[in-house]
Image (cartoon, rainbow, N blue to C red; front, side, top):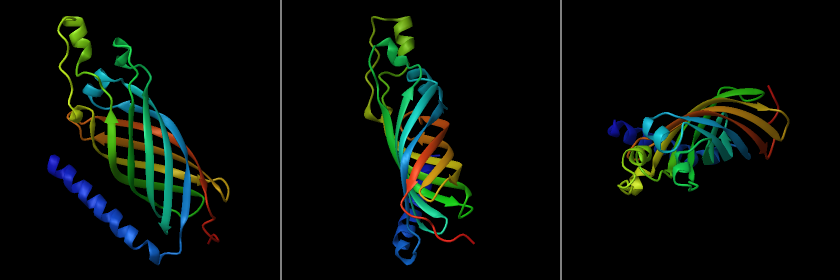
Length: 207
């Protein structure tokens, strides 16, 4: 499993570097940016127990379509638990990260289905592993401290979605993303988000 993750990350990085190097050969340069919001669901027991089952998600999103139907994306993400185990200690915890990658669009105009893959880094601010068990079973014995790798890790992301150009300068985009963080617990989330984005130029005359 670890070898597959490393290979996937390396292939994605090489593909992105190759596409960037060829960007100058294309006259198609469309920059878009905006804000996305949505919900995500925890996919592993450790994340459910230590942080929560359900998160709201807020992202700053951007996209650079430098070749026909191919775009680089960059997102900055914040995850806010609806009901967090942190209420046991009264502390507010932060869960955030970022992704970069490639989107491929199946159409050039109008309603544009797409798929994308990328990689990044994410930080899951859990205080303790299995905190509820320590409080319920033995409140005198403190849980062991966590290492950085219990909270932080490189990540892979993939998504499917559809973008709709509502005007020459505005895009509405719906995505179903999945994130996997390669920390000690392989934390993962699956969700849906909706973006409102502004774009710098029209793509050209429709055919």
